[in-house]
Image (tube, rainbow, N blue to C red; front, side, top):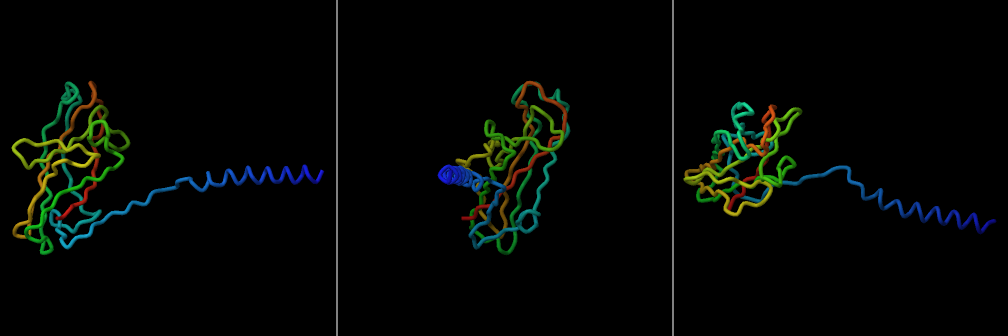
Amino acid sequence: MKRKSLLSMATSGLMLAALIPTFAQATDGVVNFSGSITDVTCEINGKAPGENNVTNVELGTFLPTHFAKIGTTSDLKPFELKLSGTNCKNDSKVSIEFDQVNNIDPATGNLKLIGSAPATGVQIQIYNDNAAQPQKIVLGQAETTPQVATVSGNAATLKYKAAYVSTAASVGAGSGVSFIRYTLAYQ
């Protein structure tokens, strides 16, 4: 009887021990670390860099019928990141690295719309606007030829454009809101 009881306790203990590593590996959250090591820190659009430095781009209001087929875009809307300040050192080269956030569609490289009632069948594309023809930035992966600005007179400007683009044959009405975080890379 003692043997059965000891054997039963040992078996129960082994089963419990086998389950403990499973519980220890559960993920309850994520901590993101960001920053940079640099001797250059430019203000962006007249504000200090950080989470409170927000640039708003109004893309406009469109009827769903504007997007007649997949790939139809709205008008390109320009926006700039104007870098300046006494810590914005002349001859420094600066580029942008867009974060790989959850609202990027990996199939298209566009921003998915977010919110409680987003439009369907449409996303937002971002373009580099430093050449004769704006070049689409495929978000979610490293840019092969990112836009680079050289600081002169303690100032530089990175130029972009954005537009809605239809990704489905039928576009449904809703809000057209999204966001992208970025980090400036100085060289």
